[in-house]
Image (tube, rainbow, N blue to C red):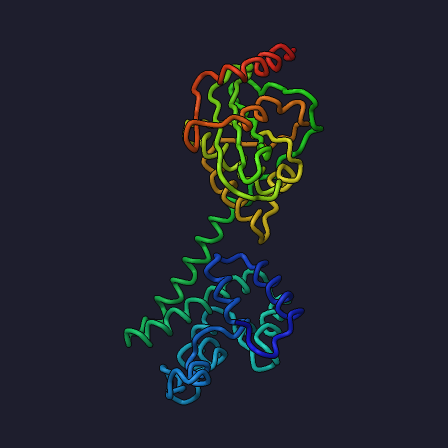
Amino acid sequence: MLGKGLNFDSLHSAWSTIWGLEVSPKVRHFLWRMGTHSLPVRSLLKYRHLTEDALCPWCGLEEESMGHAIFSCPRVQELWEVSQCLCLTKWKEFETMCDFIESWKGVDVKVQQRGATLAWVIWGERNYKVFQDKTTPNEVLINRVQRLVDEQGNYASRIYSRPACSVPRSANTWVAPPKGVIKLNVDVSLATEGWIGIGVVARDWMGKVQFAACRRCRAHWPVEIAEAKAVANAVKLGRRYGLEDVIIETDCQSVVSRLSKNAIYFSDLDTILGDISEISSSFKSISWSHVRRDGNAVAHQIARLVPFGTEQIWENHCPTEISPYVLMDALSLD
């Protein structure tokens, strides 16, 4: 539940700031709880009649509000000073925590990243004190913050900072990949109400099928979600078969554009795109290609098949009823 009096415009602005931080999802979730006044500090627990003692477990001098616990308690002030993040502790100057978080926009991004991570570490240290009555030396906490920041930076650069691939003009027919590269065409079928079919076919530079797969699941996904699921299935199969250099081709332009630009935000679709990007890091090279529907006929026909069980895979060949479409693509090659 959001606290009373919170302005939804303020919440949206704060969330935009939080989402823009180069921090882990755990830190973002923590900041969101802080902005919505849902962290279980003692002052809040007392207000809800869950405890009678609202004093800070560290200093015992003031009621433990979120601002006091994370930014103002004498126990944590040295941490903020040593981390050079004191500019992020002026919460008393703002009416709400959302306004306070939004004010971070004007601060250097590295300071934001370090400060947000430090706030999360401080909250963990607070819980360590409350539930185990133990404390950690400040030097250890500072080193922990730096390690988490470094790990997040390495992760982000590995997953999201690959150079964006240029998107060539969409072809009307299937085009073979360069020699040594495998192209995986994917498509979905929504022909049967309540069921979604996913098709994948992997072919080399001569048009020879390396493997084909169809998958069927009961779901009511929007088309864009289903297309992204098909791409995710393709990269998983590519990794399973140990492919190194691949092209993933689909007739869904929006998914290709988002993946080519590494444009990942916060929605159901973006969760899938994030998984795709993470799996893609296991390939030596990967690019995304859009093809018009006529050039994606093989994958489309495979998606319409009903597999034995949930998934069916054919290695080094394709189902008999799909062979004519594969042959037509092969004959169209120069």
